[in-house]
Image (cartoon, rainbow, N blue to C red; front, side, top):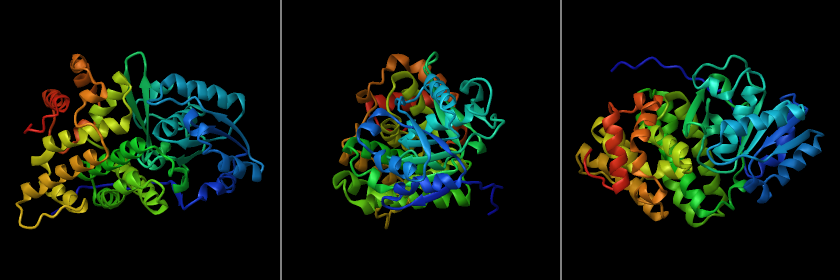
Amino acid sequence: MSLMPFTYFMPTRVESGNRISEKTGEMIKELGAARVLIVTDKGVRAAKLLEGIEKSLEHVDLDYEIYDQVEPNPSAETIHRGLEYLKQHKSEAVLAIGGGSSIDTAKGIATMATNAGHILDYEGVGRIKNTPIPIIVIPTTAGTGSETTNSTVVTNKETSFKLGVLSSKLFPNLAILDPSLTVRLPQEITAATGMDALTHAIESYTSKAASPVSQAFAMQAIKMIGKNLTKTYFVGTDIESREQMLVASMLAGVAFSQSRLGNVHAISHTFGGVFNIPHGIANAVLLPFVMKFNLRACTDQYKDIAIALGKSVSGLSTIEAAEKAIEAVIEMNQAMKIPLNIKELGVSIEFLPKLVEDSMRSGNVFVNPRLTNSSDIKLIIEKAYKGDLGDC
């Protein structure tokens, strides 16, 4: 069987290890920056997760300021306020510390530090002309994978739409994975972000744009998440499983930066834009419904996923084995008390026409393994609202 042509590109340096964030200052010094803007949110700052990192910056005489105004589903306005803060303090690099929202905000700020106009001008693929200032990322959740991706997601408040900006220039220069920063995560955030990472890996593995390289990263991420996510949820303080989840999330990010995603993300971004629902939990709830929709289009891949998630498929037909993958995802959601329908998330079906229209704007629809039109998106949302996993 011949393979589709593919390109693999991922320039981010990754450093992983317990308490490695305490060496952040030394690593940033190697990038040549003298003044750094820390981009984070008030919750991360209140949890005192910055303390060891700040000490490392001070130890090597790096000047820094802190911009802690990041909100969930960060808006274009938040990025441009951060840009003004960066200019005011003449910062030469951005250091994102937090979850996906802080990382997206930092990428946006770094981009606009060297490019004219407004961040919303750069929606789509390959529109960034000038290389952003250096981007350093320290994730405090194991879910987003944004520390190794070429994209940022921004909310346009005027239209209640989450848009994507994609460019090879958006890969961070350095990602620092420190499990000690994740051990105090609340259970619900551990669950939502972990299922976000699993969604990334599954959608990347089954994407029409997948390659042998992206699928290798995605499958390894699926295996690691299957073995470690519920342990991090129920134990919490286990450093080994926390580190495994951080690495798995990073691998899933590497995978989907090469392959894009699918219908889960096309739809979940609309939930963030319209209802301000956190991205990870939206993905977690939608995932079984989209998998059911895609089942006939990728039975072999779903069989692989079922096995990777620990399901026995001996003696089953390919379609029966594929259904075990959906079963495994549902069981993980149930174990971690994730809702089984989107109604419980606050989705209102009154907005269905807008949700369908905005979902179809996403490039992820076109790489979803099953051909998808607006009627399909409507049906998926309706079934997810009712919690109906019947055939699509």
